[in-house]
Amino acid sequence: MAQPPFSLHGKIALITGAAAGIGRATVAAFSKAGAKVIATDRDPSGLERLPAGSDGLRTAVLDVTDPDAIAGVVAQAGPIDILFNCAGIVPSGAVLDTTRQEWQRAFDINVTSIFDMSRAVLPGMIERGGGNIINVASVVSTIKTAPNRAAYAATKAAVVALTKSVALDYVGKGIRCNAICPGTVDTPSLEARIAATGEAEAARCAFVARQPMGRLGSAEEIAAAALYLASPESAFVTGHAMVIDGGFSL
Image (cartoon, rainbow, N blue to C red; front, side):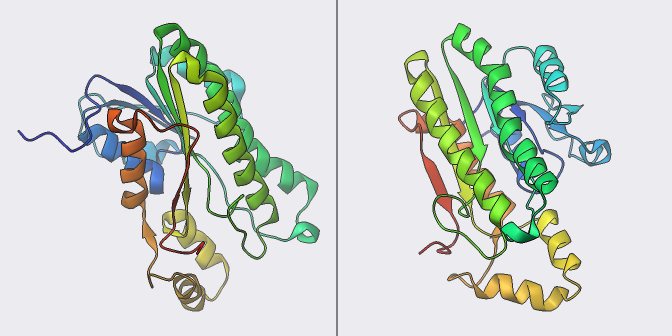
């Protein structure tokens, strides 16, 4: 049987936000590449719907805002070679439209969860002499912004900065850490936000119209980038924020 272009055979990968969208597509990509995947999400029904296409696929319900739950899942998982931090939310609103509670929730889910997940896996990675952390940021971050995305842009900018800090602090320990910065990707999360506008057709057309390529990205395209960053082929890449946005930031 032909091997995929990027092989993860013998690797154990832990993925958050795995039940849908980019996380789900990355579960499939990593599994196809031979990794033993531990798929986590707060949605148990979504985890149950993951395709059982790999003998190494395990699932665990996980609220990434709960440090004790994170510690439990990581301890039960055993040695982790790859951590893919995909769990996140996309809050709307300018500064004056965003409550302090909404601001804090965005940071808890989008940033602090990555901090806690990284703290949970790094000691084991360091002990074994290597590891790979990949964080989902966004092109709406340090790269550009978008209207009514104050909390979202701030959290994703923080993810990029945290990624670079982890990369620099642990590069001498054999750890690589990179971020993926997607543009607008066609996922269930986007569909929910489009539906919430009350004018779904117009909202979808507006999202497409701002894309120079004239289309939205797919979850599988983002997963392909995650697979590259997880693979030995990217061994010289660390501290990088990879933009995948169809020209949105140009």
